[in-house]
Image 1 (spheres, rainbow, N blue to C red):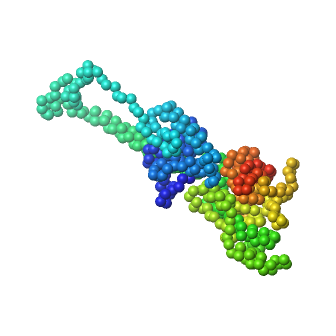
Image 2 (cartoon, rainbow, N blue to C red):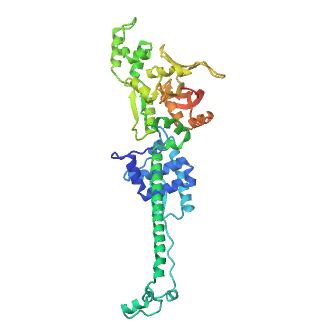
Image 3 (cartoon, helix red, strand yellow):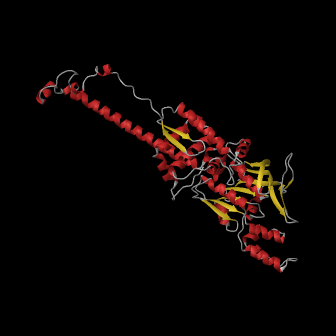
Length: 471
């Protein structure tokens, strides 16, 4: 749930601004209440809208921001087609009303969210008027003129200061001896109180920082998502996101032949040979395409969703396949997006995979997925079409054995986008539970998608493999 930071303000400064704000402290108390803390989406929505209202008070909070940054909806979210934000906000209003009428009834300030708005309102709670004493009761109280140190109410004050001093007996040695341990005890109690207050402030500050970080990276509160993405974003190692080279794909489609990885690495495909049946005009077109660096929208959307998982982005780098270098794939964490036909770096890992994508440049071209070792009820070959696509998602060690690799190979742009939905949604949580492992093992899963042009409709798991002993 990452809101936009203004003027280059970093997370530590944001946390400091929030920590010292009483409205944020109130929101934290509400978020920690049992009724809201267990409802993670409602808790994250509350923290998000309060955080935005404090850090960006002049900017409106839009339905799209909540859907995209809190609820994980895609960047093409349309509130006219999906009312998830309005439904969840109605639940949040009820939760807030319940909190401030029960366990939060002692709070001096109440949080509400007005209908038709997503900006929180902080209102002082109405307090009952103080009781007024009857006149005959006030007469029973001693007068201020009758109250003095060492003088009982109603007794006349001494006429002179000397007489007052004479009426107060000087302290004895015994009294002095008793006063010393009493004073020492008072000092000890005061120091203990100061230490307790400092500890409470430090504890609250740590909680504030933790909640601020959680509001920026809500996937950390989801065990299945954290088991996967912490391998890429919670380490000191760099993570490289590598997109396909669609210029390379077009050249292959025109020549109707694939180029092996090392041919891509030495750039021999950039100078198409004068093969039989290849006209000078065709070779010229191939040469022109080779000078371009092309990509596709679905991969950019997926890369944006992955980069948003780490808002600070200190160790995350975006590359095209043409920019990438062999030295990096050995030392960094790597996320490869696209099949071998458009992202040749995938070829380095095909020896470890069971599900292999193959593209035949015949007619309009068709991409299939080969199942090297079919199990019961599995097909040896899966063929994509206009309405059905497949995507191989694999979690593996990198060649250096100390980093991680995530492969996302779709037979179509829609299948690639669907893989992003799978990795960030409830389906991955369900898949994680089926593995019955304490920690996330290396795995490979084949997804099947139904699709119309430009939009994935459904995603199902067709088959998978677990590599518990892969090194």
